[in-house]
Figure 1 (tube, rainbow, N blue to C red):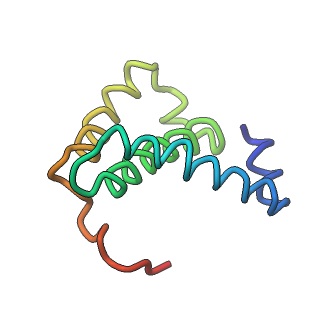
Figure 2 (spheres, rainbow, N blue to C red; figure 1 turned 45 degrees about the vertical axis):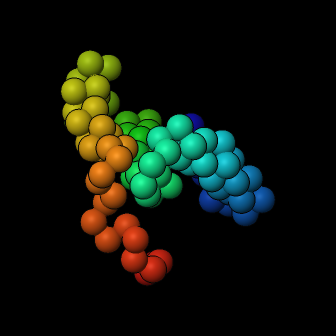
Length: 100
């Protein structure tokens, strides 16, 4: 995983392909399954949590994340993910214009 990230950061074509994959295959499909109000924003919030998990556990190897058993990861993140995908709860500020 770490090798992929390093390669993607050095080669814009790899990064562009990964972004397209995430946008179409992960975010769009997740939003389709969620349906309802703000499905795209809710899918984005959930995917952001999962990307944070992957980054902190497998790329940076943050000791506290690496030390967690699978059940610990589930206990830590299942609540925030459930909240992110709940129909009535878009993330505060999610509907504002892009401010990168």
